[in-house]
Amino acid sequence: MDEQGNYQNHIESSDKYEIMSVKDWVITLLLLVIPIVNIILLFVWAFSGDTNENKKNYCKAQLIMLAIILGINIIIAIISGISMLSLMRYY
Image 1: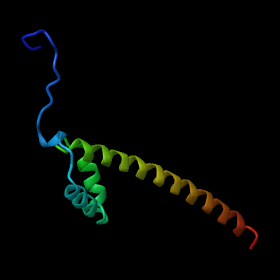
Image 2 (image 1 turned 90 degrees about the vertical axis):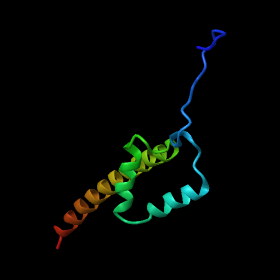
Image 3 (image 1 turned 60 degrees about the vertical axis):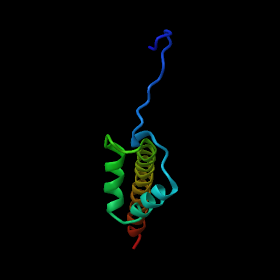
Image 4 (image 1 turned 90 degrees about the horizontal axis):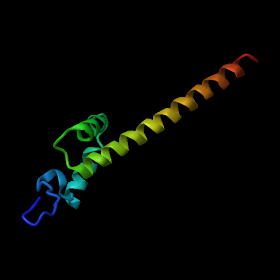
């Protein structure tokens, strides 16, 4: 509360809350193209405390999409396997 009795929001002026530049996004996306490294970096950036909030939210969204796509692929693989096994009965 200040002298006049008003509450003010005090936001830290750290790198965590700054807007990421285009250069930062390009570097981030280039690192996420590398296989295996991308999954590790997604987890590190999504759950570390000192990562920029923009990058942290992006990585969390990417991990959610990865889980959804992985789940759909597993379901399709199971259905395909069952249908292949049922077709093999006739031969």
